[in-house]
Amino acid sequence: MKKLYIYICLLLPIVTYSQLGGSNTFEFVTTSFSAREHALGGTILSLDDADVSLAMKNPSLLDSSYSGMFSTSWGGFHILQTDIGMGSFAYAHSTSKINYSAGVQFFSYGKFSGYSEDGTPSETFFAHDYQLITAASYEIYKKIYAGISLKPVLSFYESYSSFGILHDVALSYKCKENDFTTSFIVRNAGWHIKPYTSLHKEPVPFSIDFGLTKKLSHAPFRFSLLYQGLQKFDISYTSVFDSKHTLINQPESTSRDAYMRFFKNALHHVSIGAELLLFKSLHAQFGYDFRKAYEMSYGSSNKAVGVSFGFHITLSYFSVSYAWAKQHVAGATNFFTFSTNIDNLYTQFIK
Image (cartoon, rainbow, N blue to C red):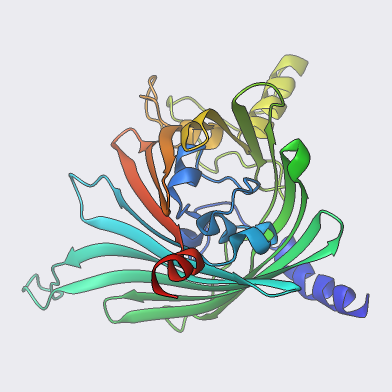
C-alpha cells in the first residue's frame, strides 16, 4: 500500500498537467506499431490473443501463452509520396510467476537536404525517433493481471536530440472461457528529461484509457472498444474553425446544442473494431476511429478518414497480419506484422 501511495503522489502532477494530443513532445509513442491495432481502429488495448506486438501497448495482457513469441512490424505513411517509415521488434518470455517482454519501436522520417541561413546547400541529415520498452506482468488474483512497462524515449533530428522516460501501468481482467477481456491503463506517464534545446521542457502524451473485447458465444464475431483520454473529457479544438470552416466553441444557444456538444466530445474518445473469424487461421478485421475521422478530415467530405481494415493469417509456425488505415484525406497507411514462437521453432527444428 505504501508503494502504491508513493506512485500516486508521483503521478498526480502529471495527471493535472495532462495535455491534448498535438501539444506534447514524443507524440510518436501514441502511434500503433501493430498491424492488428491499425486494422481494428488504430489502438486496441484489450485484444488478448498471444500477440506480443499488442502487449507492447498493454503490459497486463502478458501471460504464459505469450512466452517465446517474437514479432516484427513495418509500416509506411503515404508511402508513394514520402519515405516516412516505422517499425518494431518485440519478444516475450515467462517464468513460473512473472511474464516479461522487451522491444523497440522506431520512426524514420527520411532524408532531408540541409541549407544555411542564406540558402546555400549544406549536408543532408536524417530524423529518427526510438522507444525502448521493457515490461512485466503478474497475476495478482484469479484472472486479474497487473502490468508495468518502462520506456526510455530517444529522438534525433539533425544536430538536435532529446530524451525522456515514460512508463505504463495497466490492469486487465481476462476471462478466456467467456472470450472476454477488459483493461484499464495509465499510459505514457513520465518526464521530458533532455529537451531539444535548453529553453524549456515539454509535456509528454499522458493518457488514461479503458478498453474491452468480447467474442460472441455462438457467432464468429469479436468486437473491441476503446475509450481514450479519461483524464480530460472536452478535447475540442483550440482553433476557431472546424474542418468545415464554421466557427466552433461558441456558447450553446439551446439545450439541444449542449447535448450535441456533449455527445460529440464523448464520441471523439472512442474507437471501435470488429473481427470476422472466418476460420481458426483466418480473421478479417475492420475498425473506425471517430476522433481521427473528425480531426483529419477537410471540407464537407472526409473521404473515409478513420476507416481501417485488414486480415490476420495463422499458419503452422508463424502468423502474418496486414492493415490498411486511412489516416488523412491525403493518404493511408499500409502495415505488416510477422509473428512466430521462437521456443516452438527451437524445439521443432534445433533441439
